[in-house]
Image 1 (tube, rainbow, N blue to C red):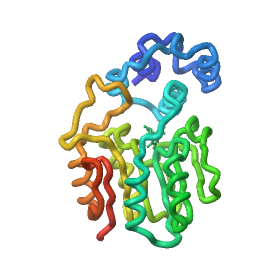
Image 2: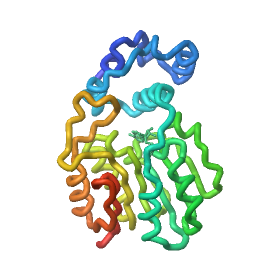
Image 3: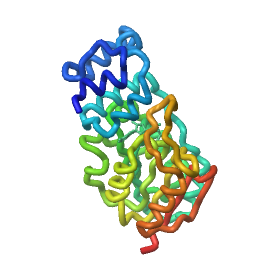
Image 4: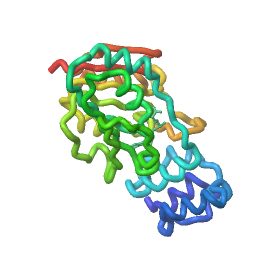
Length: 240
Ligand SMILES: C[S@@+](CC[C@H](N)C(=O)[O-])C[C@H]1O[C@@H](n2cnc3c(N)ncnc32)[C@H](O)[C@@H]1O
């Protein structure tokens, strides 16, 4: 699908074409008042064309949305702390998808000495605003989809409030890219049976329910060892 059409669908009032748009333009738009140029996003429009968005389009769109909604701190740190406490193994290496500014990593690294390294992946805009000073933290800008990215050696895969921004096909590919990792720790605000997100005011696209997500990960050879907050928070240990 033409990426200009997608931009129009996500921002019906946009006066700019994707082909001519750079991150520098977005920064300039921000100085002028970004809303007057892009208007409010149409989230249903976003959902309809999500699958057709090219990676470079997603990077730019994320830059725009990051300017509009810069503050993200949704992960429940105590829940993650409980899941990490049950692992408690020295030299633990963590990889996170959708790390944003690194707030979850910052909290877990402060609590747990047994974490040796934490590598966080995200789009450029949130990574450029990283707030973690701990030397064990390494923020990485995605140059292609996470599911196509070569990952370092790691023991724990973490993702908080990010899977719901992926289609179920992307979730499957993401899990395939981390398959074999010993622990998978997720926080995903999904209802039990799934939902289409119609009318939801945000970039949520995943139609799976928390039950399906749990069943799918179990089918890959993992045991669910922690559930919290009505299955928003799920921890898995590899059994095969
Ligand atoms: C709602 S925020 C959650 C941030 C943080 N993890 C938290 O729990 O507060 C979603 C994060 O996922 C990132 N994200 C969304 N779609 C992504 C994708 N396809 N690949 C990588 N990161 C993505 C966004 O840039 C953002 O940092």
